[in-house]
Image (cartoon, rainbow, N blue to C red):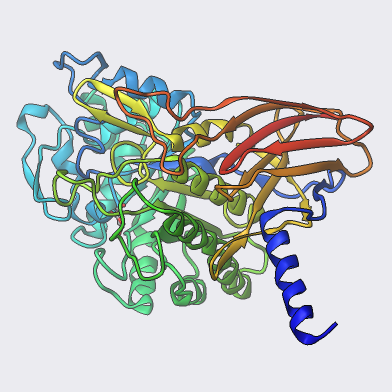
Length: 518
Ligand code: AHR
């Protein structure tokens, strides 16, 4: 064989492997006997900011609205979110947090001041939703609260008093003020963030400067008795590990439970937000997925920094803003960050879940940006109308992973999904033993053109069958609209072992979550 022939054969083999034709069998081997860390339910947290219609209109309509509501919160939206078992809601921002003054949002609503939301479209902020309304929302959802404090324009005194208002019991003046506002019982603050994006909208600080501020502020913020609030420092973003490193090194001697991290998925390295949420080609599909998979390396690099300072792995690495960020929907209000949500977003969500599970020992909390109507939302609303997005369905399919015990799963012969010179692994997997005792397997087929057959082996046991659901659709940008709300929704998925072998047939561009019969 001459060189030309050898290289031609190699090219054919590469092409065959990349498309799956004649490729070795793809296997998922689950080592159920070697349980890993618990996947905290807080990994499935969500973010609701005072931004656009994320709260006003999307969640809150006020008690006098014709839209059915419970004390102002939309019944349709809250009802749908309850099915996601939302464990945690981060509020009131984001960038908004650093301009939010909690006293504006308590007491009779008619007397609350109106401010301008300078971060987000210059909209009027009526303060109709304040602390007591927010805790009513989390109560209705059965969730817990992640309160983000205001370092940018607030004061230590103000934050210390906010914590008292929320969590003090007994006879303190602020506990009594809360009681007069209808809530004698202290609230539970599961997480408290000291500022947000201190490197940017939170004050354009240096990490050393912020670390000093953090030590100062956290000294004076005291959760009430019985409140085991976790304090989160505002950390870095994207490939920058400096913040994690400097905060790990410079915050000591005070309450400090985790470092936050933000990474938004853009549809390409050069693209920033200049491509839309729908109407994209396969180039944008693969680039979006490639971009989102960078999360894995970002977490690993930051965790390596944390490990240098926190050998006992006490600190949480909190990815408290993540998700897709595209060009805003045509005709939407500037600064409202409105975007459609397609099958691609569901695949992005599932890939990130699998990454978070793989880092469950450190990533013990995240919140997707955002819950309703903003960026990669679960739900979209327009007046009284509501529609569930493909991302909503991905969250619902992964509910069994909340507080499940991760188990190692390794993929053998996982082919590339390639388009031109861009390539990513075709399949992503995660497995866990859930609280119901069952072994769950989640698989994502990133290839929008090729199916993938996965032989499942449960080491030392074997799997007799699988039952669950699959999310896919004919088009990469398939999405739900008010007119066609079920264009993308999960369908039942079952498989039975034959001849001692369990093979799962993953459709192209799909997310599959199954419980295995062992
Ligand atoms: O989620 C939208 C914004 O993105 C948040 O307010 C901010 O923290 C981030 O830059």
